[in-house]
Amino acid sequence: MSALVIDGLTVVFGAFRALDGLSLAVDPGEVRAVIGPNGAGKTTLLDAITGITRPRSGRIRLDDGRDLTRASEAEIARAGVRRKFQKPSVFPALTVRENLALGCGPDCPARERPARLARALAETGLEARAAVPAGALAHGEKQWLEIGMVLASEPRVLLLDEPVAGLSDDETARTADLIGALRRPDRAILVIEHDMAFVEAVADRVTVLHEGRTLFEGAMAGARADARVIEVFLGR
Amino acid sequence: MSGALDLSPGVPAARRPGPSLGGDPLLAGLVGLVLATALALVLLQPAPYLVNLVGQLAAFAILAVSLDLVWGYLGILSLGHGLFFAIGGYVCAMHLLAHAYAVTGTPPDLMQFMGWKSLPVYWTGLTSAPYALALALGLTAAVAFVFGLASFRSRVNGVYFSIISQALVYVAMLLMFRNDTGLGGNNGMTGFSRLFGWPMGAPGVVTGLAVATLLCLAAVLVGARVLVASPLGRRMLACRDDEARLRTLGYGTTRLKLGIWCLSAVIAALAGLLYVPQVGIINPRVLSPDLSIEIAVWVAIGGLGRLGGAVIGAVAVNALKFWLSAAMPEAWPFILSGLVLVVVLGLPNGLLDLAALRLKPTWLRRAGSRP
Image (cartoon, rainbow over all chains, first blue to last red; front, side, top):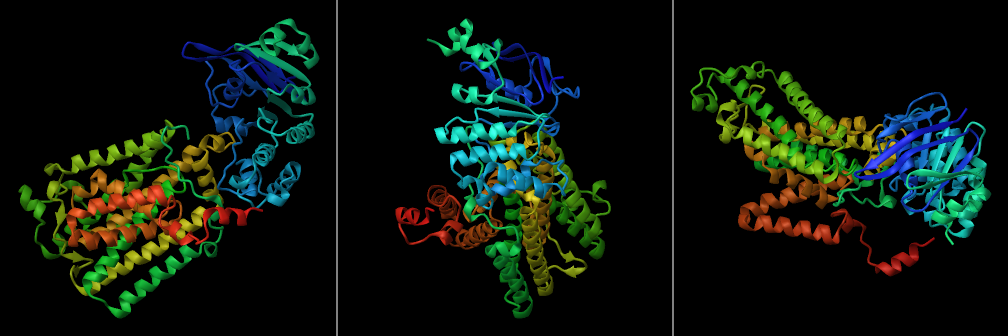
C-alpha cells in the first residue's frame, strides 16, 4: 500500500503543460527523490500536492483513500501532508519556539504540545535559539527551523523542496543526517533536489522528471546509467 | 506577498513587544496617561473647548487603533475605514435627532427640509440608545462581514484589497450625498440638542462625553493588547508575514482575517459614534476617500504595528491639524504630505523610530551588537 498516490496528474499553465499525466506512488517508510532539469515540473508537483495549484486532471490520494485533489491547502495539511518550501518560509516576527508551536498545527492536543516542541527543538538543534525571532536566524538555521515546523505536526507525508539549496557542504551533510533521522515506517518523504551527491545519500529511489513526465524511476545508480537520463539531465 | 507593491509592514522582530501588558511599556504608559487625562478632566474642569478637543482626539485614536489592528498586525491595509466610522457616526446622529425630537417635540431640520410629516420608517426605535448602539455595531459588523467574506474568500489581497475598500467608501459617499436617503443628504445631520435628556452644550455633558471616549480608548487599547499578545495574535502576525505558509501548516486564514476585520470595523464604528456628539455634525465628508487615507497616514506616522504608535500618530497629526488648519489652512495639506515623506524615507517605523534613535553611528552600533 502506498502512502501517497499520484495518478495521471496534469497541470496546465496557459498553453504550457507543466505536468503531463504524471503518476507516482511513494511507499510509507520510503525516501523518494524527484530530480530533473529546470522546468521539468518538480515544484509544480509539490504545488499540486499541497493544493496551491489546481490540476486540470488526475488525482492525488493518501493511503487511507482520502482524495486531496480538490481539498484546500489547510485541509491537505491537516490530513498529514507537510511541505518544506524551497525558500525558507518561517515567520520572521515570531520566535523559534512560536514558529514551532504554529508548526504543531491546529489539531495538536494542548497536552502534547510541550513534548512536541521540545522534540522539534532537539531534532533541529535550535534549543539555544528558542527565544530568538526567526528573522534574526542565519540562512541554514532558518532551513532547519522550517524542517522543525513541518516535523512538529508529525506528518505522514513530508515534502522537501530543495532542502539544501544555498547551504554549505557542512550544513548539507547535517541536513542529510537530519533527513535520515526523519525516516519512519509510517512516513513517506518526497525530496526535490538538484544536488546529486545529496540525493544519493538520502534517497531510496529516484524519479527523474522531464517535461512533466516520468523519464526514469528506480535506484540512483540506475538513473546514472540510463541513457535517456544522461541525455536530458546529467548531460555530458 | 506576491503583489508588485508590498504593503506589509516591516516591523523589526527584535523590538516586538513581549506577551504581557507589562512587556509593552509604551502601551502601559499610554493607558495610564489616558486614564490620568480622564481624571484630570473631571477634577480640574478645564475650558469646555479643550475638553471637547481631548474627546475628539481620543475618538481619532480609537479609529487609528482599529486600523492598526488589521494593517499592522494582519497586513490588510484598509483605505475605507471611514465607512465603518461613518456608520457609527450616522446611527449615533439618527439617535440624537430622534431622541431630541421625542423630548422637545421640535422636528429635526432634515424633516422640515424634505417636507416630511414624520421620520422615515427605518428611524423606528432609534429613540432608544441601547437599540441605536446595537444597530450601529451590528450594522457595521454585517457590512464588514459581507465585504470581508467576498474579498477574503476570493483571496483578494494587498493593493487590490486596498483599492476595493477605497471604492467602497467612495460609493457610500455618493449614496449619502443623495437627499432622498432620509439621512440628511449633502447637509448631513446636525443640531443635536439633547443627550440622554440633557442639553447638549452643558459642561457636564461635554466632560462626560470626553471621559467616556477616553475610557473607551483605554479599554480598546487593553483589549487589543491582550488580543495581539495571545496565540491568536501570533497567528495574525504569521498571516501578515506569509499567509500561504500559514495555510500550508493547516490553518484556514479566511476565518481569522474575517474575524479580526469585523472586530476592527466595530471598533471604528465605536469611534464614530463617540465622535459625532462631540463634533456636533455628521455629513458625507467623513466618507470621502481622503479621510480614509488620512487614517492610514496617522498610523504610518505614529508607527505601524505598534498599538501605541497608532495612538501617538492619531493624536499628533490631529493636534497639529487643529492648530494649523486654523492658523494657516492652505499650508496643511503640504505639511501633512511632508510628514508622510519624512516617515516613508527616514522613519520606516514612524515616530517610534525617534525614540529608538541612538547617538552612535550605524557602523559602530552594528559592530557592538554582533554576537
